[in-house]
Image 1 (cartoon, rainbow, N blue to C red):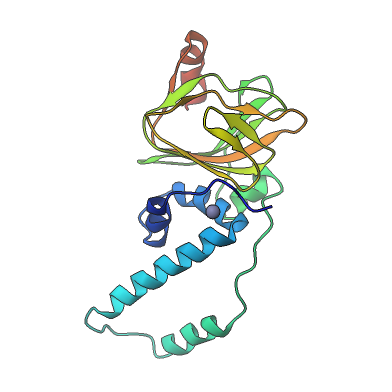
Image 2: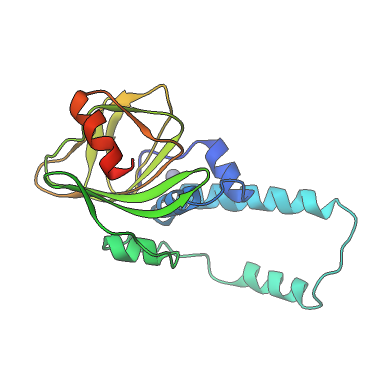
Length: 207
Ligand SMILES: [Zn+2]
């Protein structure tokens, strides 16, 4: 089934332009693997970027660059890769090491992947029916669902779906009953915990 929730045009443009920094592209690309429509849109935006570059004064090009580009155009269209089967393979897609598992609550753990000056990318596993503590954000957050599903105040997100939020949203995501939910997440800034318990736990898990 095709995803129903997609990144904004701004996010796709940022990816096409290579302007998303570290971490965030990982999450957008996880969505692209499940979404032919967004893959096509990113390819279109990249082509527009390429056309703009063509209007610049010519630069030295490798002698086989044209042949390589033509070969790529003639090649088969990119196939949809299956979604990552496990936390480890999700990160392996980018050859990035996955950090140690940190438990946030019974049934809920995170594993950091990339922590940069602009945010943190991590895997979050939520057990069947488990809920995260209510929280807000101090910047943008991108979520790609790798497995299972969750719901929050903005809707329900299943495999391949992309949830995008910012500091205006406060939510309490709950995993569907019957199946664990595995998400790849990039958060620009730390969470704003809405409960005393959350604020007490926050320094321990670094989210
Ligand atoms: Zn999409």
